[in-house]
Image (tube, rainbow over all chains, first blue to last red; front, top):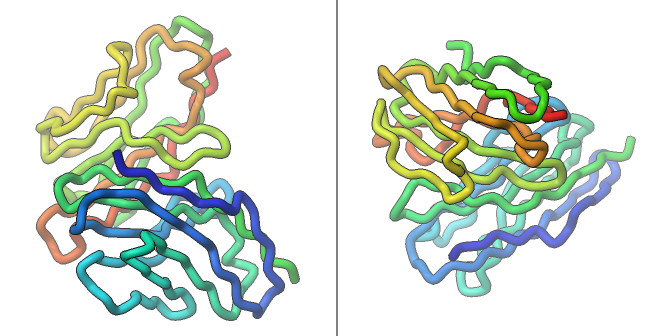
Length: 114
Length: 116
């Protein structure tokens, strides 16, 4: 069975600095999708960034970028120029290409220090 | 478009009572998902629909849980004979399968259940 592991329950970063959130996953499949979702306090979960496993190029979305290492089954999220609004729970997630069930990690709570 | 709407936002009930949650997805989305999230955990998959057809159910979904999407639009999740272990946030999400934004779920704000 596929699993997603986020080894950092909490992290803190100074405003305007860069932070990297770690994620590893386990799968025997070659075709899949990876996601980072953000869940602000008492607000709904929103997609931050996604990566198709067949793409070698790392995805980027403005200040958010990923480091996708397929062989190592690693998918880290880098947030540049951190802003107060980035404070949230961040969930790494995996979806097989064979079905539509997304598996989430336990999350990393990110604090932004002013 | 107002996004994915869930009601009620918070439900407090006594053990043994039945509760029902409703989810209204984005109107053009054909897939609808239910997840459960407990404190300090990531969301856990419960079930999903393609239009009105329930395509998969997790083993987490015991026989006390039932979900429906009768006309392929809104969905309900009913929990019968609630137990304290059912206390959680129930998240609904929808997506457009086969469209340009496939694989991307839009989540609602969730319905928080507290079983006393």
